[in-house]
Amino acid sequence: MQTPSLPTVPGPETGLRWRSIAADDVDAWYALIRRMAEADRPGWVEDRRDLEQALETASGDPALDTLIGLDKDGAARAYGRIALNPGSETESGFGGVDPQWRRRGIGAAVFGWQEARLRQRLLSEHRKHGVLRTYAEEANASHVALLESAGARVVRYFTEMSRPLHTDLPDAELPAGIEFQTFSAANSDAIRRAHNEAFKDHWGSEPRNKERWAFTVGHPEFRPDWSFAVIDSGTGEVAAYQLASFDPESQAIHGYKEGYTMLLGVRRNWRGRKLAPAMLGEAMRRFRDGGMDNAGLGVDTENPSGAHDLYESLGYRPTHREVVFDKPVL
Image (cartoon, rainbow, N blue to C red; front, top):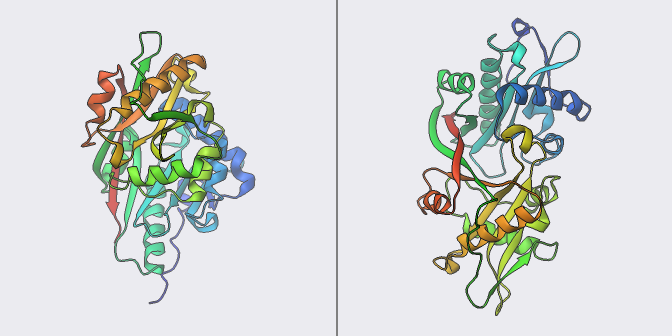
């Protein structure tokens, strides 16, 4: 099979000069991210390390899978990138346009480039199917409208939830023979393997290899002191785990400092023992002791495990939603 040609980047009608993103673009790229965040007020904002990692990961080639649009003065006004994990047919699309440059067709041009680049990549790897997946804040009407007009369809909703820590906290007691063990380098890989097992059948989840895991637990926002495994004292096995983070921008975004449960899972053989509520109670105590005002987490709205109801029973309340859009490209 002949490898298809690379997709054409957006043209001069956008008023921008386009090329791939290089390491020395990170400052300009991050400044663009911050301008977008100030206008859109998303629930989460990429950190500089997230941008650096996007240029280092094995899920894409920065020379081919990233795009930045520069104005005549060299300021970054738009960007796009795709990430496709080895063996996956679902590509994650990321992008955005400076608030002052919106409503000029630039966002649609970036999405079109993402779609074309994914198609070229899938064909070159002899894949028969592929999906471009994009997450959008439900409250960001222009982003949602752009994806709908491009032919993407809604496939999932994720709800962000938060709970004040100044009220009584739920019980964190574990069953006999099981104990909390704070995250460390010694138990990190066992937790990674437990996570891959616990999320094997979850919608949209893909196994985390050692590279992706190292980025997660090496991220500046990761809090190992608030993170832990639940260990079976008899066997030393990881039964469950909770990994936490703290975004220093949380007070500016939400109006309160929030400790965030970014990963929570229970392995199949230990389910039904109320480990999840005990872990969340323990996490809340660690967050509060660390000076946080609230505890936060995200949940798949259609999660069949009843997680949404559990979180509400523990005092978490919805704050906003993300919409997941898919567009088949092959």
